Image (cartoon, rainbow, N blue to C red; front, side, top):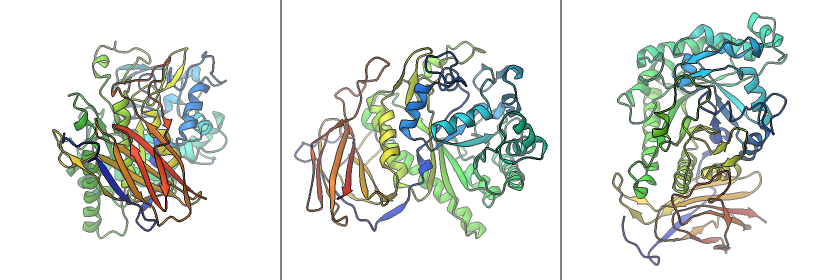
Length: 507
């Protein structure tokens, strides 16, 4: 890392209302619940818990999800969906089969299925992003599930839903055509040609059932896949005119305990998005299409803390503690930068799902029979969801930079700006990647006349490895007085290694 003194570490930013990247789709702040570990059983659903409602869902968990204001939740997987028979999860619970769940080698109870999840999602204020099984199944199961959820009535599958107590259709609008079908670990893994053909024909059949739906084709499981980005090109050769989005998945970790390099990983994420956009635009040009393909980054997060623990879990157990990463403060900083990266690509990234929502690599943790609490990563997600809605602006930034093990010219200041025209607010999101020094920020917002400083929220901690538990919240936001706005110029002292939210509002 370059050695800069506190006097040297200054950054400048110009924010102009005319420099628009694009409208922020509210679904950028989506999440994900898979039948994996304790995400469902012991997470959102725990009959007998002190806070459980009549259907068995935990009200304490509901309250935390409602606080996050999650607009859409992907379900039921994930790797799980590639071996899932959706019919197992509907009808009388007592008659549902128990199944060997092959993706994660557990026992699936099927106590929670399509109808229960939809009703729960409606209670927490979220839409459902439903995935169909294109691993062990295909066109027939997908079109039947869509008929079951979305058709009003008068047919076999829609009337079956009505007989299960749901008279009105669920009207689920966003559908994933399988999950990570490029991955050799996936049940029913396919080549890009095999998947592209199947996705196309499934899309066609589903649109015949309900022409109003939006469809997401599987992109690469990560930018490190040997088939990336050829997978996207071949898949889109088949599906470009039939789908609305292509998916991206990416997880990061700090296995080498190199925090400076870890906090620079969003440069890799930025390159991933640029490459997928370029691939989409190449296929658009090749097909002479008028349509622009949008991106669904429907799995993203930090994932590495739980890897060793997962190797010793007993197979065929029910809801074991799988993928239960306990996040520290530096993870919250990276999550903040990942959210900033999405905002800088708001013109093309329209859906993003933090994977996952409860217990499984999640911002919310629970104890079976006990408390629910907020992990460190809860807060950047909360702030972005609360204050990152509107139009993403392109700030002109000058920042000192550093070199790390894998990256060069890494800006210490990582930032994004959102203008919410409806409520006349501006939010500046900023991460200071410097691990030793504060950063003095000067931001020109003179194109926004009559605005005042509303608040300055800071997430900081002297211990990069600090974690939150059910008993102690060591990492939580504070309100700072280290910012001011005079004559259209914001000046702020950005602490070392910190997440920052500067909010302005028109008087």
